[in-house]
Image (tube, rainbow, N blue to C red; front, top):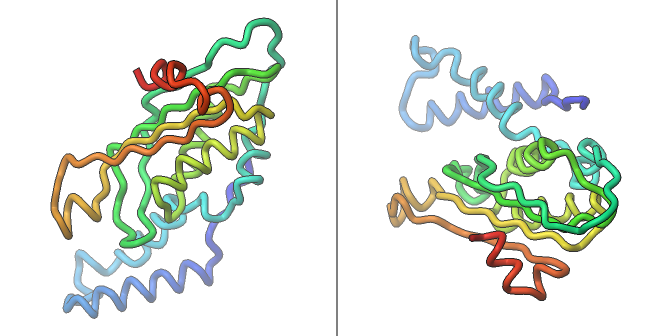
Length: 193
């Protein structure tokens, strides 16, 4: 996989912006504890927002590593994939997030680690949890060539737990059910159970 990084110009814009934020907050960006902070933040943003530099189609192409499968069409479920993201409204951390993915193979099965990599890459964007759920389902549908997919995401949002209403422990759950999962409540229950 070819990693796309921020350009030097983009990194400089981030560093200048962080310096201005520190000044606006009333701190001295040149003091010992802060003088390297703009550079560290630019490096962090390069890493945690990597997914912003790829479309869903490009992510699908990066992780389209499937094996042919014949025979039964049993459910494949991968549960409790740990991810984190940042909400686009406050650039606040979405954390303690767990992704569950289920699909029924139609001749193709994806390598299990690729499911985790897709979830990670989708989360490395300024996001809404609802969009994370839909993006993962969209990418898997492109790769697996089936609409029999379900994705569930549960997480806590820093914009709700550390500011505003301040309700630590409040969890948000989102689901996307397609194909047979949309039609069959028993299958959905099996995935979530």
